[in-house]
Length: 128
Image 1 (tube, rainbow, N blue to C red):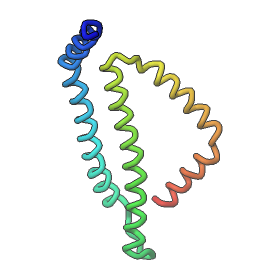
Image 2: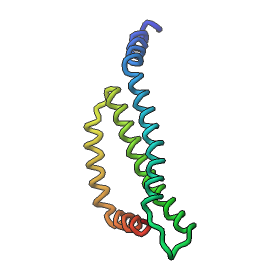
Image 3: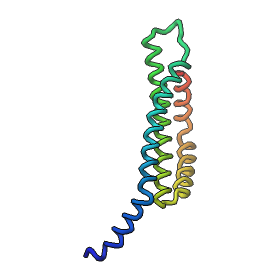
Image 4: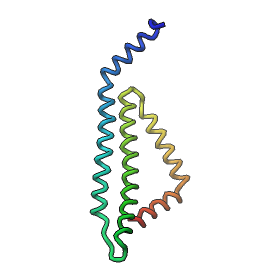
């Protein structure tokens, strides 16, 4: 039985030696970029949002926190999807059909939810 699976084990060990460090580096780099981006976005938004004479400090802080969470969540998803696609490409999975399929699904969802997207964008402008 072991003789039958030995070629698979040898192939996996060879892949682990050659591509394993690259996959680990991509995952570690994605995590580091995600953490640095969170701190950077928080600093930028805290400086960029103007203070108003008509709102209290706690209302401004809540507004800033909401905007920070929205931007950080969007960028976190974007960064991790890019990292996952890079890992898939390193492992030999063709990502071109995945990207094409995601584009087609995105267009279909975009047409189907135009009013929802308008409401989200208007809400972001109100918060900002």
